[in-house]
Structures are given as C-alpha cells and as structure tokens.
Length: 111
Length: 116
Image 1 (cartoon, rainbow over the protein chains, first blue to last red):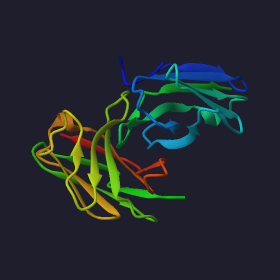
Image 2: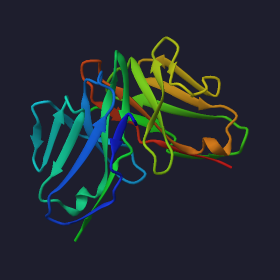
Image 3: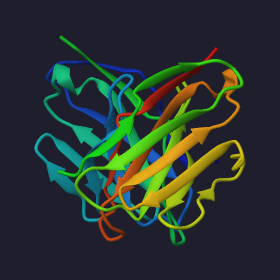
C-alpha cells in the first residue's frame, strides 16, 4: 500500500460546482496532515492544515478520520483559479520531521 | 510570512559535471531543511533531511556520495549533485520549517535540473 494515496484525476468540474477529494495514508504514526496546492512547474504552497475536528477556511473544508486514516478536502463554489494539483501531505511520524506527499489530484475548473 | 529562497531556478549541465543548489531561509533560522525531488507526474519524494552543524539524514535509496548536502549555517543548506547523469534530471525543491512546533513547511521555488 502506498504511503499516501490519492486519485490522480483529472477532475473536470464546471465553475461554481462543489468538488471533493479524498486521500488515505498508511502510517498510523503520522501526527500532522495538510493539503498543499501545486501549480504547474511551481513549488507546493500550503492550502490548509487538517484537524481531527475538521476545519474550514472560506470555500475550503478539510476533514480527518484517524480511525480510517482518511483525509478529505471539499471546495465549494469553485473558481477558475482553483485549477491546480492538490497534494495530500502527512508527517512521517515516529519522531521524523519529513513530510510524505501524495501524487496529487489534478483539478481543472471549466468556465 | 516565512520565505525560503532557492537558487538557481533552472540549470542545464553536461553529463559528468556537478551542480550546486542553494536553499536559504530569508526571515527565520532553520535548524532543519529538507530536500525533495519530483519527477514529471510523480509526487515529491523526500531525499534527505539537512541538519545544521551535523550530517544529513538520507532516505533509503538516496546515494549520499552523489547528493552532497551541507548545512553550514542556520539559514543556508546546499545540495550538490555530483557527476550528474541524464537520469538525475528532475525538479529539486527544498523546504524548511520555522520550528519543530510549527509544522507548516515553506518551500523554495524549486530548481529544474536538466543533464544533457
């Protein structure tokens, strides 16, 4: 099983629609979870952290299910500028500082 | 916000030569920096953890003699790809955290290396 698994897409979604991505991780020792956004040929940028209680930032909602080792990201009222690759990221855990990245889900918002 | 600067943004080199990539934390001291590599349509893969004043910790399968890491100060880590070959062509990105408690990672702009 891959350490962090995501559906690569692409997801083609009309502007204004709601879209959800899922991610599963295999390392139960992981303590912190994030969604990063990566535009083509650019560095990843933090979109939001993910907490067990769930968190919302504007049109974006992230949720974590530790028991199922599952993370989700919901984007409401999608904008053209939301087109990007969304990376599910978890810490390695066990005292290690590094991050483990999923391959990313490619989202294309269509006008 | 924190800024991590990486240089150069892109480099083309001949096979067999060495290339040095610099990663600087501009507004904070980073005792730990991380080096990643990303091949086309693949995820970022952690290569090594760079520790200020001590040896880097390499991930399994990464050759430490080929990818030399130096973290001589709290704001600078360098990655040197020695005797580069075409299969080393990739997107190399560094990242740093402000501190261990703040787990957000800030990334450099990345270096696109092409070995011909």
